[in-house]
Image 1 (tube, rainbow, N blue to C red):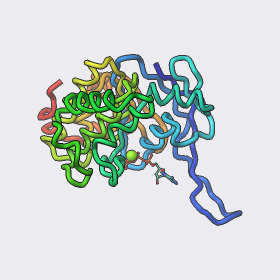
Image 2: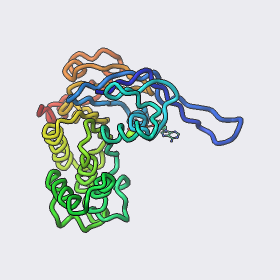
Image 3: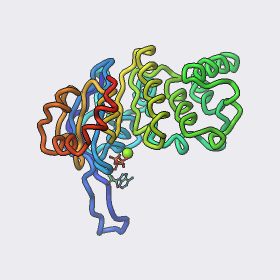
Image 4: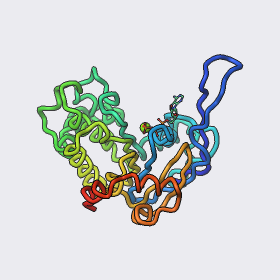
Length: 263
Ligand SMILES: Nc1ncnc2c1ncn2[C@@H]1O[C@H](COP(=O)(O)OP(=O)(O)OP(=O)(O)O)[C@@H](O)[C@H]1O
Ligand SMILES: [Mg+2]
């Protein structure tokens, strides 16, 4: 479905001319995501997970490398390729409060991507209600602003918005990080159900190994901008190869792993 080849990305760490020092944030990242699988990316804060996801949806430009989506090069997309990319791939961000427009009613946030498809307003309204239903919310939430919903409800809206146009690949970046454990579990279950119902592929980014263990088919472990290990979930958890993965796994208490072990 998606293949990433030797991706590099640097950020300039100073705005002073002639003193620009660039810091490598992604280095030689290569992996692929197979159709219908859930690939999880784990790694400590600042290792480049969000930057990688942003490169995949063209919110950041890589310095080098290639991103191939269903056989089509989408690394530096022209308008037509960008629209192909956006119909195929959607991303849900770390913090729903900032990804939803605070001045838009929930109805408009959900209607916006549908209107872009030139649907008439009756159809838009029907689809918005359908989407709400999909994510377990009701009509009463439609005429509120994001600040009038809970964090978990906002994250449901962000999920509804991301699936509005039936993407094939959904990228979820730390979407449960700001939620309490019981709401985390609900959102995770929702994502699993939607993935199955809509035949989607999932790239799930998290630093929470216990969550990853529950949801991943394969796991990629990142450290300082590099993928140090990528393998089936069982292998990564029970037979980790890289010293960094071993350290991550051992630092996670056995108790918490077993508590979360619902897969
Ligand atoms: N726009 C930017 N300009 C300069 N540096 C940036 C920019 N965005 C991110 N960085 C730096 O790139 C590195 C990777 O950031 P990134 O957000 O990808 O990490 P992350 O793995 O998603 O972390 P977290 O788990 O905390 O979300 C960090 O050191 C960050 O400071
Ligand atoms: Mg991040």
